[in-house]
Length: 480
Image: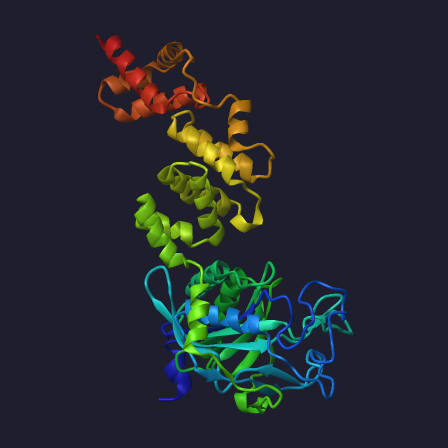
């Protein structure tokens, strides 16, 4: 049977195979092989003869970068190699002035790790290696819209760690779950640089087909969209009887499409050679042990501690620790005296619901643990209804300067003990006699309807339980 027949009839049933290459920018003060700063600077001012590749210049390896990379490898359950070395990856392109990139090929820093996803699946890590970043190419009017390109060599030589997975990922959604988990682990380690330190190359194929690479995708939502489009594109090619060729594509965020760039190079095309200006590096067991001692508590360990220390449900603890900023916020609230279980509920239900509705990340907004701790206190004391907790949260996340407590006080939304509940309940019953009669006949939903009207009349400032108790009491008296 021909390949086209074999694949064309079963395009929708073929197994999706996705592997990712994640490039993480390390938060060191200087570049990987020279003393140039990694801080923002005027274009082409943070450069020297080493990162520009001038003849006779000699690279010197950044020790902190090695420590950061080793932490990443250990956190990803990798086996660190006893010794490793750097190679020259030869290619001719304006972003690398010396016409080769110093990277690791034959023996990387570490290999054979894994990341466990929320549902228990393990995605294998093939290797973790170090390399220098190329220069930044700047298209003044947008890619493909300018007849010239600018180059900023400040980025040339910045330290990167590349994390390469096996093709274990089976869907775009799973790829995003993996990246979320990966980023969270790296944030816990505190080794990243900048706001958007991760860039992703996606390798995708349908079972039996050639591998297509999508280069330099920024943002995890973009990764998911690019992979979804590429799956549709490849399946369509197969249905038409065409053969999917190995090549490299780019993702256009504006159109949501991937576009062909060039035929995919093989490793042999790069002509790797041992970097003669750098010696082989050996990390002793003692050095690795010292690095392990500086490792922070990672998400899975923190979640277990939250369960034990605060008696949180396993699910809630994992949700809190699945976001570095959320876990940190929870701990600050508890330190301020907020009740742990109520704090957990507030963050994992109310806060995340508002953030998800507005497509926001916690790291994108400014919140204070003190303000949330006050709201937890009001909740524990029974001074605010669930509805008004949510309203105060929406107001707070929207950017208003007032805290949830200030919002509730300003709008008279705190549960009041002095409110004339009897008068309000009697008014609701007399105005809704049909619902009152329905309840007397055994319709429990009618009671919920009446209670809702009471809460609306009082703007949530009456305890919901008290409202129901008063309604039941008055309806029973009226029945007699």
